[in-house]
Structures are given as structure tokens and as C-alpha cells.
Image 1 (tube, helix red, strand yellow):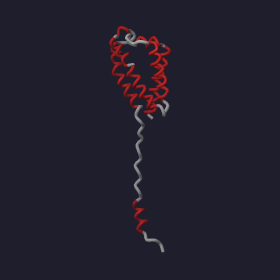
Image 2 (cartoon, helix red, strand yellow; image 1 turned 90 degrees about the vertical axis):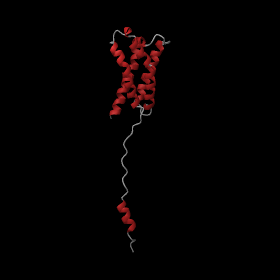
Image 3 (cartoon, rainbow, N blue to C red; image 1 turned 180 degrees about the horizontal axis):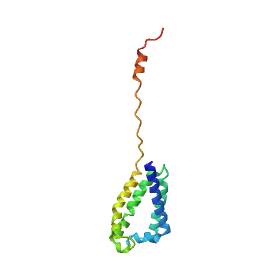
Length: 145
């Protein structure tokens, strides 16, 4: 139950973030390093990927693959988080300490996503021992005349 709730929260997080890429692209554009080409298309592509993978996360047949996709996507956008931490003057709305704290939080996010790449392991019930007393009694009983 906890893992299912976690999955829904993770999906909601990425769906919200992905939709926000289309609602407020300028916000995400400021996070991207200047050396990247096609910055606007990259904002839309990353947002679209977050929406698609977030939606696939809640579909059991796609969930694990979507989680792997979100890990790849999260690693791909990590340079933007580094850029933010190294250039806090460009992000007056955020405390520089918060920008640095986001970096290790990405590790937590990756661990959270990774948990959803793992198959659910249900504890198996111990096998019932064969009723050896009944089997022994039936084999040692002489046939009836």
C-alpha cells in the first residue's frame, strides 16, 4: 500500500512539473545553462517527457520502464540544477543555500524513482508439509479382505 501511494505521488509530481513546463516555460528557461542550444525546444521536450513518463508510471504494464525513463531524464536535467547552484545571482527568488540543497535532493529523488523500478516481492507462504502421519498409516494398513 505504501509503495502504491508513493507511486501515485511520484506520478503527480512529474505530471505537475511537466505541465508547468508548458504553462510557464520562461521559468524553466532561466534554469538552463546558456551553452545549451535549442533551449526553448528542450524545455518543451523535457516537459513532455515528464508528462508522458509520469502518466505511464501509474500503468502497471509500463510502470517500471517509466521509472527507468524518469531516472534517465532526471540525470539529463541535472546540469540545470548545477547551473542554478553555481549562479545564484540569476535566481533572486531562491536562497543560494536552497539552490545547493537541491543537488543532494536529486539523489533522494533518484532513489525514490529507483524504488519503483524494482518488482514487488510478495512474501511466499511456506509450503504445507505433507501429512506424513496419514501417508504412513495408509501405506502400512493391510488391505481389507
